Image 1: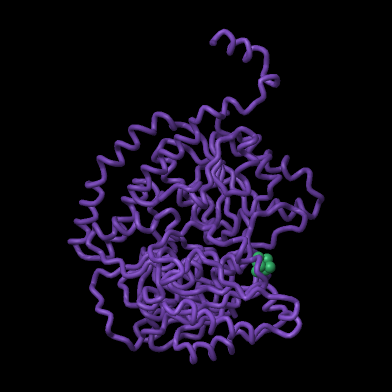
Image 2: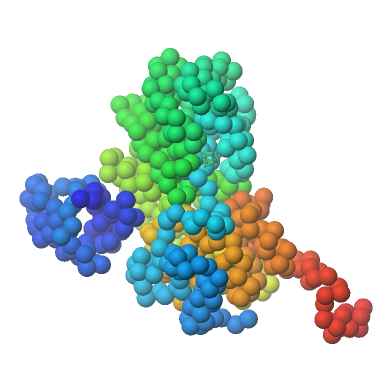
Length: 70
Length: 493
Ligand code: SF4
């Protein structure tokens, strides 16, 4: 269950950052991304998948969340 | 020697690895690679931030060095106690050339060494009493200090002293911030974890201090400089450019910085981050907690400076953006003259770098502005995210080496035959004796600044001075020279 900081990149994409692993990857897809909630399964550009229970209301970024590996 | 192909470089790596015993060879192979700009993520081609192998020559430092030497030490109006035996602080004292203004010993303490000088009895009975005693003493002798940090050396963690409790107590009696930092040297694999621990200490003990205090009047143009250690005056050469643009620099952190500047940093509009490796943690934290955005910039060489100035300006309104253009224009004649003068003397020269956590990628642009080419680079303590940022900066088929060992570096140099090497004091004399021009790229070889337009002029001069120095043709003893060379010399005389 890595704790992940999500921030908005200069190009507008969301960046998935795991401090422990110095991993920085863009988020390619999010399962739920609406006005009210954000989360579910997340696909990164490197092909790996993570999961977080959808959060309501949609959090403002940057924020730190605990993800599960899928 | 002409540029090496991908196969040649890969073969060179294999050849160098030959001498190691099998397990060491496997381990080291992961840290050496041939650059391929196609690769998006460095973790596919290089491993970094791992423990160095026993038996090889590494030049890394320890976590204490990362915290005391890099992040905390240059906060000039605080006193940083090297808590533990005397050596760690004394042998590294005043080595980093972070310039500052102030009267040392009165209101600034940058180059002084404060230590609790542990003796056997402190190890046996614990050093907490001694620590609180020396803090009282410090307060009597140096009443103008703005706060104290306790930088733990190895024994503190080993004997389990409770420096946090002592710090809290002292903060009450002294009525000043007292920051315990758990940066014992054995933590982590290099100084890099020390940076992180120091960043966390700033977060926990300093950053929130003025959250309630509204006396600081901020403007929409407030920026801060993080991760510029003012080596030889670097941060000053950067600051003037930002001020020319109409921005107000409200904090300089670990380069001529003060505690108050650090405390006011969350009130800035933008944090400018030069050394990503050592300060990204706190920048990320401030973005999350205070909503202060941060960006990485690069003030080495006119190309990168112009790029960075424009990027910085893009965070602000049109006036600032127009000003950025004006600044670039203002200095154009100046830097063009530098290029015109030195480029013909340096064109086509090949450089190998091996520095700490930022410069292996950041200086490349400055060399390219002078027509030089960086053919090999590597970090002492970089992480994957640093290598991610390096791949695109380096040419294809160039060498990349992580935590390179003394042996590997020498072998690479013998084969690649660069015209110039940029690295640290520990490498300097080996390569100079091999007859290869060398510049220290940690301390700027006691020169500097190298940042900003002013710094670029000095950088170019220094590279020329080193590379084209007539001494390099005199390194070989006359009787070892080949006969033709000797005859040519006679004929020439
Ligand atoms: S490793 Fe420990 S003993 Fe050595 S310099 Fe660092 S803190 Fe001091």
